[in-house]
Length: 243
Image 1 (cartoon, rainbow, N blue to C red):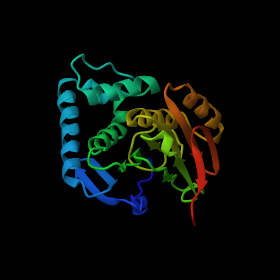
Image 2: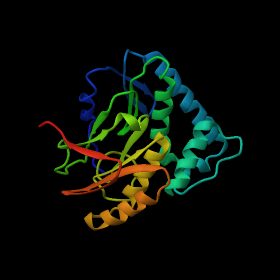
Image 3: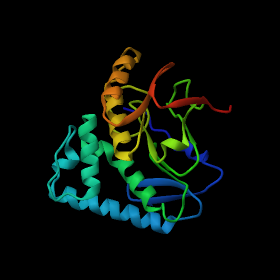
């Protein structure tokens, strides 16, 4: 079973923004914006959950699928976005839920704040005019706390999502300490991170993981960490963090 680690990484957030948390049932967001937008963020989260839960009640196979799943023609926008991203990555649609909700909340707050960061269990949505740096968290890997992914301003809005087979409660079939995906949508970054992490059983799988990342349409880049080994591809810039 993956090791569960408390979200101590939430202590380090953009110092130029106001941070606050929004929790609705299993959804637990850390948000950074130009001012406290807890109330509208809470409304958006509740709307997302209602949209998804209403659909799953009519089509429970959507939640249970571990492979791409075609939703009903009358499915709501969030459901369609998750399904489309899962199809591209070759995983079940629920693999895209955290990233999809993070993006929906971020876009919903755009009218009230130019700069917005949404963190949803390691899946991050970034929007604004400033480059941002996302510190990597890879469990017991020696890279944890020493490397970060810098996202250039010209790539925003974008999502940086992480899946792990050794850290956290999320389902993964692999043993990657971290599989990080960069994409222009939250759903695709989340689904891609899951797909990449699923095929990594050890350091010997890093090359195959990069090949998979390169084959996912729309993916901008990826980083895979297994112990003291790392592989990266695409428009990801790795930087050292201050120690």
